Length: 186
Ligand code: IMP
Ligand code: MG
Image (cartoon, rainbow, N blue to C red; front, side, top):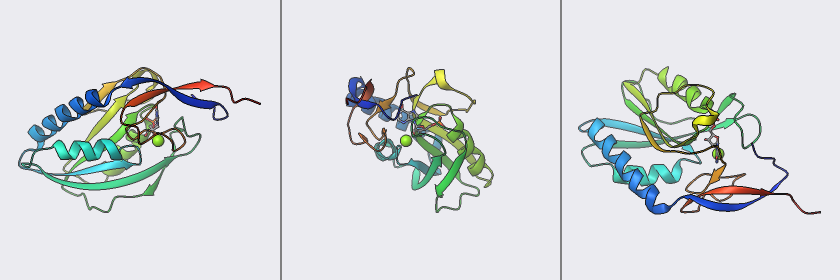
């Protein structure tokens, strides 16, 4: 967990844009094979998943009927650690009963956010619900979630870029970086 009083700077690149793009194409190919001839509602979790989701859906083949929607959730507590109590700030607009839903999230940390979202969406009687995460930090896992599509397993380090932020910052970076702590000066 990161102390919010500290001064953070970019450390090293953990995943380059080329590596991310290659993995995004592989996941999109798997999605295309799984849902060929079917409709899917891809639900991106704002704001972190936006960049990953928009790259991902553009790589899915035309044989899948892709719809896009978004949800925004906030977890009570600090910005760097999930409390497990999740509030829906913006719900999706789509009526998902009988539909295939693919939840797209930037990172699974404790897994509490995704576990909550799967329950909420699952209660709406969809045909299927699957989870796609770009990153997973298994060392921090508190609950099990079945992940259908996973980009990369990463160590327990705080990362930013490619949609991921620290306090709203650095989402626009094309690569994924580790942040470093340095005490704020007097
Ligand atoms: P979980 O409920 O603990 O799995 O929390 C997932 C959420 O925590 C993600 O959607 C991110 O917003 C945030 N998060 C966790 N780890 C990181 C990280 O390393 N960088 C940026 N955001 C993170
Ligand atoms: Mg976030």
